[in-house]
Length: 415
Length: 145
Picture 1 (cartoon, rainbow over the protein chains, first blue to last red):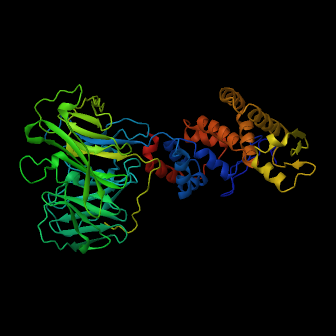
Picture 2: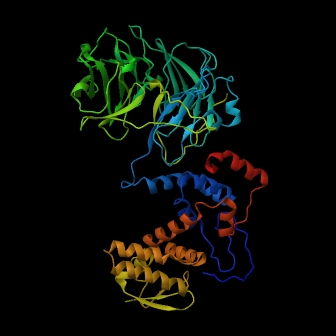
Picture 3: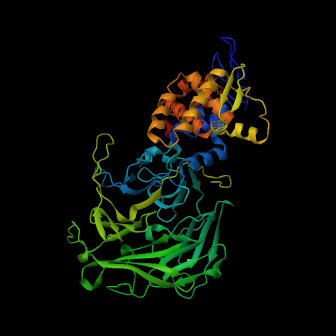
């Protein structure tokens, strides 16, 4: 290996062949450049794209992102990063919802908060002064992409896919049909599923188009906009209907695949037969649907219950846990609010659920039966203004922080 | 005992059980290319001596985690050019622990540098036009915050 070059001599790198050398400084092959880059913090790697064209193409290669993640995400690595994003209302702007989303658990990956000013100027220009593309987060997929909506126009919502770390966004072309009431979400190939009464309209990023499907059901559906998204299990969408229970629809099998899964028979339904959207949560955990309800059982005080759908095909629920809050020893006093609002399950710990109560966020651990209040004294210094923290329970989203930002494939989408 | 020949003609003797920490050497021995000595044309004498120092220490003090940690910390306290020579040798000789240690050291050294400073260290010529570079920085503004 020729490590002794003449002093002062410089060599311009040929493409793909490594780096230039100077006197006494060795020639570095690309494989070693990769070994160095995958050990840098994520943001630093992206800055290094500006070093030279060769480094940019190394980092852009799909294999690089994979190598980067697999080096960190070994079994012994720290628990995966995740957080709750919640919408804040700026204390000074009572009339306009100057909404932005705040990260509940701080972390190093760097998503401190998501505000309209984080977005590129072209995105901020969308919508009116009061509303923008970040009015509400509708759903989040496994790659860390958010489906956001803007309230531009009462019926004709505009939807965007946003990567909150890189701030890349893609606008989904508006559908030709307006819909007054909808539930939206992601499934792997398709984006933006909207049922309106008994028809489904969906947008596929494969074809770049909207399509209609009619669901042949005898009953009229009254779907609940539970955080505006359906729950996806095995690529089947699950919506919650007020009276019927869970509506399962497989978009790949078509309209005839609709099926109703009745809710557990032993739910407390205090006032009527209908399910109250504020008090329930359903989600997927380890391949099974889980249903959680916080209820005021016949004025006996608040109690929480959790079921797992142990037999998906037969629709059998297993009551895993049920306890009255009065039985729990905890420091929290329960004043007048009758509602305990379930927010989300912990993504990786099967025994923890997060609940909203009044102005606090609580965590409940099923195993230890511990109810704890999370410290969420949030003061956000933006221009030296302290924000009044006002959490709307419908606007809290569990967000998994990706280790490597995904770039949105948008070649088929024409706005 | 295995005999290793560096690029500049220096000779080193090392026990086979130690030398096989290098996958490259291990395969050469297995393929019977190592009758008299193993030529290593990609590694000079100074660097090879340092590499052998590392693998000897890691062989003899295998279970002493604390001792190895402090050895490693001292081991990488060398000038940058030498550090790169060791990286290249560890890469060629396929010694995973040494490659990991030295690459992480360099990564830690450059992680807070500006783009210009990184170019200076690696002596890389900026082959972007000013417009291309400005666009890149703009597209990745989030990384520069």
